Each structure stands twice: as C-alpha cells, then as structure tokens.
Length: 377
Image 1 (cartoon, rainbow, N blue to C red):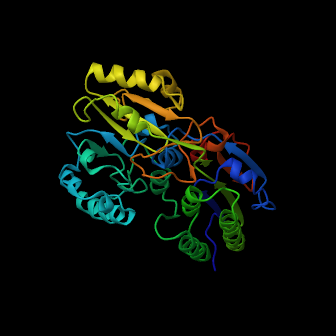
Image 2: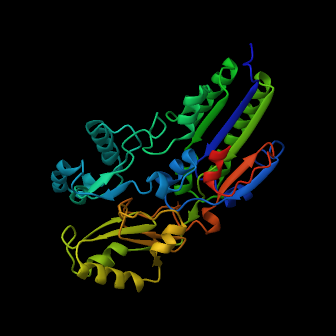
Image 3: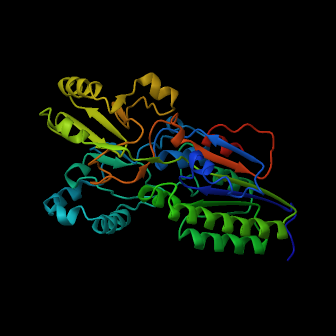
C-alpha cells in the first residue's frame, strides 16, 4: 500500500470519563507505549460543555455551549409537548419512552446535534430552548468558533472522525482508514466507559474489562498505524472523571416548599449535580437565594467565581444563579433522573475525581494543563 506524502499520522483517542484517578488505578494501560502522562483540569459542566471546549480550545463562555437546556420560553421548540403532561408517570418517566420521544422530537425540530430529553418534566419544557441544535462536528457547527475540524477542512487535511455506532465499530472503521493510508489525522470519541461508570464502581470487574478492551484495540490501531506511516503521534485523553455517589439530596422539595409558582415567580433546571435558577421577580430571588445559602450540601457561585471558571454569561442565558452540589452528592430526583446512579461527573473542576487524563507516546515540549489545551496540538 502506497503511503501518503507526509508519512505521518496523528491519532487522537478520546475516552469519555476516563478520569485521572481511574487511570491511576490502571497504570498498566498502554504502559509500554506512553511516555507522557498527566492530569488535565476539566471545565465546569457536563459533556455539553467539555466536548465543545476540547474541539475549539475555548471556554464555555467563549463558545457558549455550556448547559443543554436554557430558559427561553419565547424561542422554545417544545411548546407542543406541554400536552404530554397528561400522560401517567408510569409511562412518561420510562427511559424507553423518553428515548423514543427524543428521536421523534429531534427529527421534528430538525436537530442534527446530540439530543436527549432525559427526565425533564413535560410541563416545564415549554420554558426552555436547547443549545446543541446543530452537529458540532459539522462545518461551522459551533457558531462563532472554529473547531479543529473546521481548520482541518480549510487546510485540506484528510481526516477520520466517526461519532456514530458502537466503540467496537468505530475501531473497525479507524483500522480500515489506516490500512487505506489516506488520512493524516484521526479523532475517535469512545463513549461506552462513561455509561458503565454511571452504573458501576471504578474498581469493578466490568470497568477493568472495558479498559483492557480499550488497551487491546488502541494497541491494534497503533501497530497498524506504524505499519503504514513513518511517524505516529498517539494522544489518549478524556474530558472529565467520575465521582462515586456518596449521598443524595432532594433539592427540588426544598425549593417547592417556598410556596413559589414555577413559571410565574421563577424557573429552574435541576441537573444531576447542579441547579440553575432564573428569577422572574425579586421576592422569588430573595427566597430562593436565602434557602440555597442555608443548604450545606452545596454552594451558590458568585459571578466572579463563574468568570474564573469560564462559565459566566452576561445575558445569564444559563441561569441567574448557579448552585453546585458538594462532590459525591446527587440531586435526586432531578431533571436527569428519578433515581441515584453509582457515579456522576459535573462537580467542581478542582475536585481530583473531576480531573481528566492526558497520555501521549511522545513529549513534544508543549504544556498541557486543561482539556482545552488538547486543541493546540
């Protein structure tokens, strides 16, 4: 097989939720290949914030992708769904029903990006719009920011990027592309570990088996790349870690005890580890703020703290007030789910269990400290 002129390939393997603490429990992973290994600080938020930051090198405040749902009743594409609130909870809260409706709604709204309803109550959806309407990997997929894929397209660099199918299928397609020796850049996003870590402890047999499977498949791709290319740069990285659940807290019950009316006095979105509030009058602002300041299970973020973390928005698109739970404490129930899961991410980026992982087969001398720095390579 004839090699491309540059005889060089850059392999970027993105293992979702493969945090630094998890890597340290499995340091045998690619041990004879990796020369550089270090923790990366993640961004505050979930994958809806992390992935855009990785592919743009920008903070959420700069690329404006932070939370999936944001308060905007005027532009909400979900107004017709308010009629679904009449469905009994035994149907409306079933995961299978939610997934099916997510597919239908995504098609009806013309969304091309990642979309899932999660457990957002139908009666509240009419107050919200959705951020990732467009496929962020497509050309100009993130408005106002160029992604690494935009730059590759502009430079005419042949690349491989597969976001659909199972992790196993993605590896097969990557190996096929390497054998054809037509690409100079590969980006593989592996998402199955994240799902397993939500349901299993990091030291469980099923997690070790998945990491071992990644070790085998990455080695296969690496050896294949070395066969067809003279120079192979391998970077394995993640977006965040995973914190095992230690306790739950019914924050929604606390807020509902204040005798305020949702949609008239305030709006709120209860993520798994944080709650975001929009105030529609001063009385609601005072009551909710006072209540949250008395809640020991989490903390209210000041604007200065949000600015430091790169998630402050002048228009308060994603909340007038952000309340984050302490590491290990889940909001249950939340708009993400009715029951607690084994592990979750989305806590403060300074918490060691939030740290992401960076591994490379070469030391190119560049400093990498955050997940955004991966973009610079």
